[in-house]
Length: 171
Image: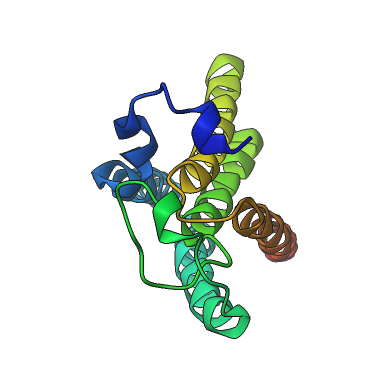
């Protein structure tokens, strides 16, 4: 059974949330909040790391998609939107797991309020999962496109964190 069949009774506007202004807001919001926070703490290297994640994931995606050259799911499966680029990897999923994974890392590292920490981490994980599910639900990606984006994103995120911790330790 396909995900679209399972979710057919849920309003379509829910699946479209990551394709509207909300997706842009969910990229800009953490960049602004953490940018201000890092500026106040005069942690300029943290700003560079945090701000470079969406850029690096976007550029990586621009390299991977033409190399893999994987077609999108059939047009008949695509609901409401019909992208004309290649499918593998899901750029929405890749950017989301990297950016919001960094949000989780910084919340876990710096947030002292246990309730805010738990809520922030839960929200971040749910957003990451929702974006991936929405890609398959709308029929614009194969499940393996999203899984590939998550795996690549986790690898990239772990590299970022490792580099960040090494640089932070050298200060």
